[in-house]
Image (cartoon, rainbow, N blue to C red; front, side):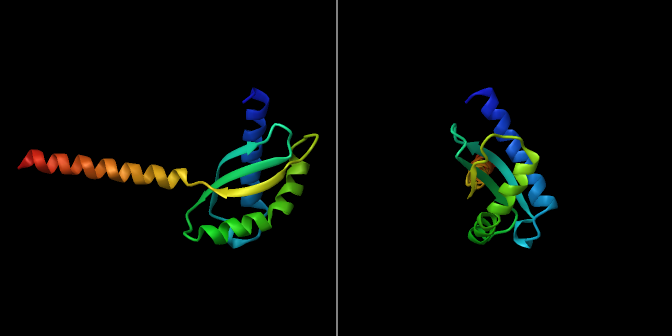
Length: 118
């Protein structure tokens, strides 16, 4: 990925986080954290990955995609770009996967300690 695209991805991540925190009124998206943004090279689409403290992933994903038009228009005011991409929100499974791996490693370490104490 080029440096320019990486900077654009980071700018989108920062500005979308600000918009969700300051401008979006929907309570379902208040506890959302943007983890990554991937914009296509032709600037037509942006996948926005997020996590949330809430458990209902589908409800939050639907609320974010419903607000994507508003978020996109707010981005137009905040980021100067020749073509504003369509925004699609995707739940980031990697955080849950990482936690699952951490739990497995911790369980294995605990089992080793218990075997060593016997």
